[in-house]
Image 1: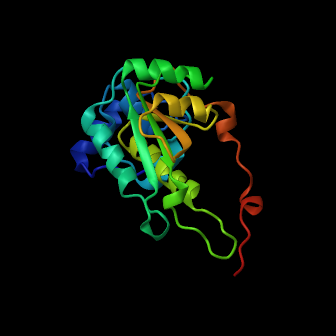
Image 2: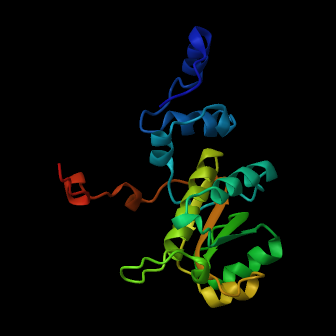
Length: 214
């Protein structure tokens, strides 16, 4: 994991903070969660970020600071889309009444103080000429992934929810005409004791995952 190069004094500082750490706990999480350090004090490289990210199912009620929300949304805004058509819209929901209403559209309710609903408009998307494949949902998935990883980079936890009633959700959000709702990204601070599920660690072997043609 890459961290800021503090020099000798900084290295001694980090060692003093991590005495007694269980080696099975990532250093980044240990420092930030047990020593009450801000997550962005110790920036992660991308590999560490994607390894540490997990689906959080227990959120703290602590609100997400607006400056963090702004940076997350900017990451989604600049995400790539096919032919740069940008047929994607995001609804950033933090209003308590709206969050309460959204509980009725899904069973995946874990107390996140911010939900980013990602939708796409197929009429505005690129279409593959060979088979008529519409790229709107792919574009929305790219944007949602950028949002999710940007939130992780801000020291926040996330949960991608795909199991919801899109018609009911569309009735809660303004301006959804013509949009297909693709994902609800739950965002917030992980509650104390939150941890990845056992399924998180299960991965197919590389030989099954990829076919290399060298």
